[in-house]
Each structure stands twice: as structure tokens, then as C-alpha cells.
Length: 310
Figure 1 (spheres, rainbow, N blue to C red):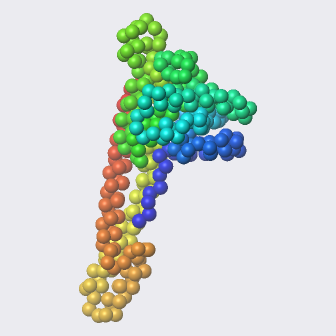
Figure 2 (tube, one colour):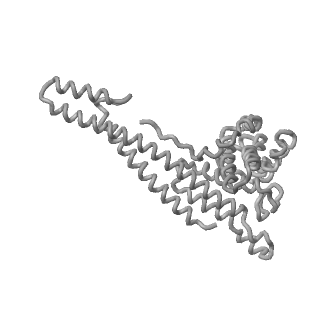
Figure 3 (cartoon, one colour):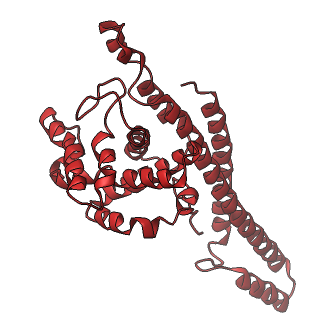
């Protein structure tokens, strides 16, 4: 049984731009990062590109933001691997070191004429609209950094929770809604401050992310329907084998039995045989039930997301 093919993020929109030529140098720089950081950077760039499209930004700005997304974590080149890859929660001292990836990434970009235009994404992607972010605690954050912040946070949660399907992805979006809401501690301390009225991330960008996530759910559903067709074709083939098996057992002559046995052998695929074909048939039916149930859950997930309020 072949495995279903599905990437968590739909690659369609990102591939609509000829980024390979535009970004060859930048992508070479990414090659220096560890695998997980590089994959995260690619995911963030994908999300940033598609968020920009929903905002109807022109292609030049969309490509600029996408490259900023690719390079946002480039400063992690300078973070010790024992901190960068630590599975447990970082200590306060380690977190202070981790935070320097923003300034170190900015410095790397500023020192390279080819990367200089994208330095602000590296510097500001952990800043918060309410001033609680780092490294500078600013509140007037460039739009590209605001978009990267939302995409970065979403992919970080997806990776941490090891999502392989969008079932229950609304739980992640609910967590992001909390970050888009005013912090009660800020309101209590300074209810007159403008900062007390905003959250960490841009609500408009988050709403657009919801649309991107729904697109990804529909992409997953499409992949599942393709896989269902494959499963149904094989179930139909195995049902014919079962029919031949019954006829073989009912046959009155050796010639008839040999005829149906040869028919069964012609229908077997690699690793299928007379000993296991019934189990293979049950496995295909079970796989069909599981994927059909997942499609129902994914459609329900879309309904949940559409009802979420930011």
C-alpha cells in the first residue's frame, strides 16, 4: 500500500513566483542553518508569501516579504547548538542568549550588501505591538515584521505539537487569538496607555492567516480524496480476487481451479500472495474508513475556524 502524499503547507502560491532565480544567494545562506531551523524558515516564508497575496500586495513587495521570511532566523547561525536544540525549557540565561539571534541576524544582513534590504525582518520579528517584545520593545513595527511574527508563531506551535494533519488545528489558532488580545496585566497597570488596547500580534494579519490555514485544510482534503481513489481502486481489485477465490474453491475440476488461481495471481501486486490477500483487503478497507473519517473532521475544522472571533 503506497503512502499518501501530503505536505502540511500547500506549496502552490509560493511556486507561482520565480523565487529560485531571485533568491539563489539567500537560499545558499539558509543552507548553513541546521535542518529544523531551515525547514522552519521555509515554512514561514511560505505562509508570509500567501498572507501577502491575501492582502493584495504587489508582487515586488510580496517577494521582498517572502525573502524576509526566509531570512528571519538567520541569526540562529550564531546561537550555540546546545541552546538552539535544547529539548527542555530554556533557563533565563539561555533565553537571553537565544534572543540575540535577532540582533545577530540583523548585523549579518547589514554587513552583506545582498542581504541588507532584508535586515529588518531578522531584527523585528519578535517585537510586539504592545511593546512587550524584543530586542527593542518597539510598538511601531514594519508590516513585513508583523506578518513574519504571526507566521513564525503559528509554525512554531505546529512544529512543537507535531501536527501531521490539520485536525484540531483550531486549537493553535485559539492560542494565537490570545496573543492578538490585550494583555490583562497591561490594562490593569496602565489602562490609559494605547499599548494596553492591543495585543502582541496584528489582528488583521491573524484573520488572513485563518484564510491561509483554511486553504491548507482544503489542500489536505484534496490530497485525501486522491488517496481515497487509490484505496477504492485497490479494494475493487481485491474484491475481484476474493470473487475468483470463491470460484476456485467451488470449481469441480483441477483445470477450473487452475484457471481462477492464475487469474488471482495476475491481479496480485508486489508483496501480495495467496496467504495474505484477505488481510491486505481488510487493511485497505480500514485505511479507507480512517481517511474518510479524517475528511469529515477536516470539514468540521473549517466550520470551527470560520466561527472564531479575533
